[in-house]
Length: 256
Image (tube, rainbow, N blue to C red; front, side):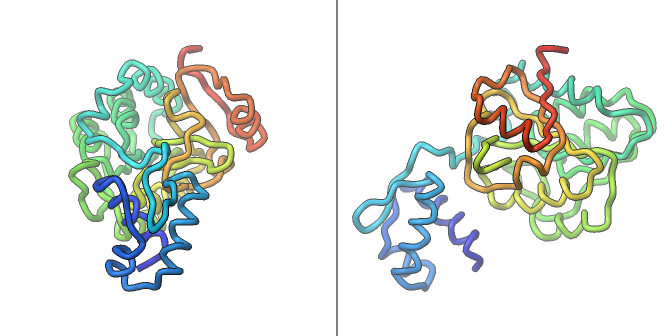
């Protein structure tokens, strides 16, 4: 088991049980107590938990993503404005990669009327939405995750290996000057990284609730993307400065 996978499992147990103990984790993973303490220490440094005597309890950092249907209703007006601004970057006859986030699904609805698009996506709802508009839709193979309504995992990452597209549109759970672009689910990290690496232009979409947040797993540093589309001005000066230094263009949907 990779270290990252062990960390992900520790946080899953923490989310479910509200606490973890070193003794239990030693038995679960078959590793030594010093190894588990090192794991907890590393996660504490990232503000993902708070160590206690003999174990750990949750911190304030986001470790949980609600079900797809619940996320689809959250910040819906903001997501639609962001999605509309993102859709304006898509031109006829382009090849685009669409991530599996709810904001990206809103965007798929805005590009239905483009002509001659080739859309590569791991989002089952987005694939269905665009197939009805007679676009050339390529669904990324991989393990299907019902809670995300998406394909993820090593097969999905391998599927993307030889692709080259005009633009990739990515959803994230956090945008931080220290941690870069982050998500709550380790399973999504490799696929999102592969998408970002295969595109001439990478567009990240994140509403104001994600700005300044650092969630569990980093997709990459800020300079891994070219554009951030959000719904309000970035009030946090350090984050705004870090994005500008990384060469990330900031587009606010409310300005459009």
